[in-house]
Image (cartoon, rainbow, N blue to C red; front, side):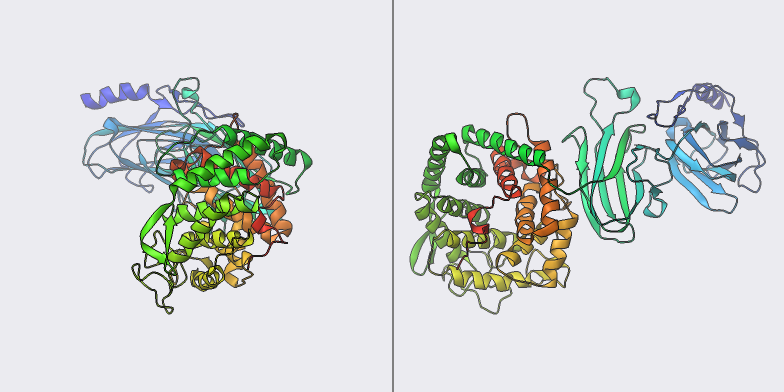
Length: 618
């Protein structure tokens, strides 16, 4: 009993969650006066419980044995929202349940815990606590306070899709991390028209952490989907990339589901969530902002320092591609000098292949197939822009792509591929690979197309493209879209964008392309990451998706370019460069900045040579 008495003294000073008024952030707990109702046994279930409390009245008791259950009756004349703190001696584990008289479970959570904004319907409820430990004589206390929560405040329980809180379009919802376990906040919004919407998300510190140096904003994940569909449309992250986030999901008429995944152990930290309609029309000041962003990016690339690392070839490839095209005016001399410097580096970087050959002649490579294809594509764009020094280098790059293709013409040292193989016509990581994947095929195939369109007419390109088309057609799963490897399953957003571009570029068609284009349309540029949670390579996705959507044209293109210009002009840094993100971070800022400049140019309807309608490969 001495142990219990000491705990009650502590419990008398326990923290209760403060009153939260409408439109205000949750406040930190404040000491509660010791006016709690003390439990009276027997009260092991709602049938034997006789003590009634009102919302806002604390209660306390003790688990007499290892399996003890303590229960109070809580009556509310009307729906009420409460904050709740469950304090347990020695922080042992207990389970708190709210039950209605109909035995409907309203809320279940393990404690000790704090819960913000818990909505209880009117009527009689059972507040039941189960001892989930092996301890006896364990004291507990539950403090509650009433919240005046309006329609603009997130309320619990909303941890599951079927409990999603209905929210209006155009109203800022004030949410909070509502309990100490992994909190999910689900929201549902009625969509009356197909189109692009703006989703704004602003994380907030706990009130008690505001102004404390070094305290970081909590890291959130957001997932967006159709409420009645298991198919996820977006996976966004809000994790220190920016203090506030703006996303542009594409919704179809029906009901949209937003899942805010909150981190544990920062109860009280909040966020603002706003879903709005937005016009996809490109306005003149946005185009002006995009042109200014391109200029700043170009200036940064003109002075960017080279460095040698494992991703140098990829960084230089997009550095070159961004400089090769564009309107340079009085900066043309500086641009030409930088291009010459890049071409001299590529000239020295080619390495003689010791095993593979192409039609009996030596070939030279720039590294693995990924970076070699990227560099060959950049060299092709330089040729198309009039840099004749790039032509022999592009030819070298093309010959290696032809030599490394999985075909019956491949060097015997690498292994000739049977035309009946499902991988026939593809490429993978190296010249001697024996299987293919769509991501490498995409870079290689586009590089060959761009080279041919630029006038680099190496014998064998047309045959290589025909073989590759056959392999790409096998990289699909039913009519749902494109897979990583031939005759496999598992579509992904980046694969969708690669497959769609290849089909559109080469005049192919199929239900798989239509599915891919629909996925791209529903996954607009996010600005801080790709929407592919398994392959978080945003610039990679935006590069392909922008090209595919440009070739598609029409309303989807107007929507895509509007969102992409908005996002990339937002995320450019003051000195003109863009920062790499997550899985692409090792490639460096020249890769990211080159990609962003290339993408923005196309969004202004200024395509590279090989995408122009009057230019035809083959």
